[in-house]
Length: 107
Image (cartoon, rainbow, N blue to C red; front, side, top):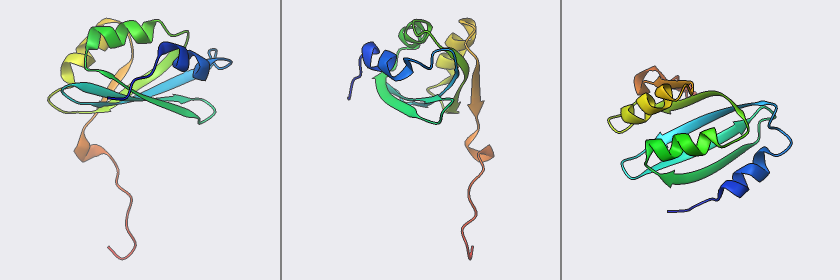
């Protein structure tokens, strides 16, 4: 599993900490893959252990305003959603059937 340090994340947000950030999470049984999106459209991705409390601690340690965290619903993510909500971190869960799909020409 690829790892990233908090100092790498801090370098990414440096100079943008007053702006809004959005986070997308791909939730798996043993890991979370995260994408951090800045207001300017730049993103940073990393993988962390699937530990909701540890993730909340990491996110609360960042000097940023999280506008929203979104992830696709599934059986492994509801504990994470409860932990994020308990920590007053905005989280939305997207149902796979409700995610718009692009129309393919000729389909």
